[in-house]
Structures are given as C-alpha cells and as structure tokens.
Image 1 (cartoon, rainbow, N blue to C red):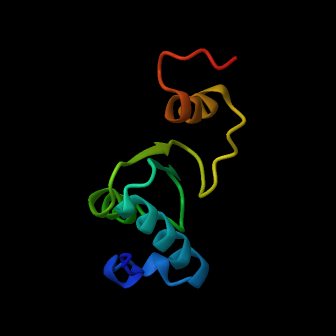
Image 2: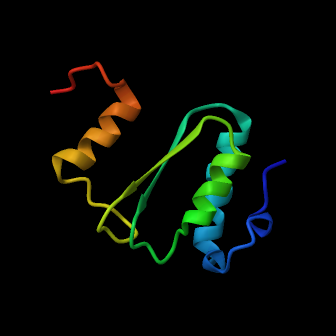
Length: 97
C-alpha cells in the first residue's frame, strides 16, 4: 500500500492533482522499482521543500535537485538544466551529445 498524501501534512498539496502526483511518485519510490528524481523550481508555490524532503525520506532511491530562480516547472532549455537530466539518466561520465 502506498503512502497517502495525508501523511505529508502540507497545505500546498490540497489540490487533488498535485496530491495524486505525489502519491504516484511515492508509490514508485517505495516499491523500489526505479530511481526517482524530483526537480523543484526554487520559487515553486506548488511543491514545498518540506514535501520534497518527505518524499526523499519515505521513498527508496529518491533524489532531488532544486533549480534556482525558477518557478514550479523548469523548462529544461538551458544547458545546466539539461545536464541535470543527463546525469540522472546516463550518469556523470557519459557523453550524451
């Protein structure tokens, strides 16, 4: 059984869609089926740092990165943001160009 979003205890997750998304991430992370990377924009008003910390604590193989100066959904258009995803999927030493 997955972690319910009620266990997260943050008012930022009152939106039904956000709650369901967090539940899906936690379910996958707790099952240990795959690695999970949580990418949070520093200025997000939907996903709090506290929620990310709880996702890491309650999940398995969950890591996170916070992108400075960005709102909820980073665009992944700049090289530094793209590198975050490359490192997650193919590792530090791989040449993905």
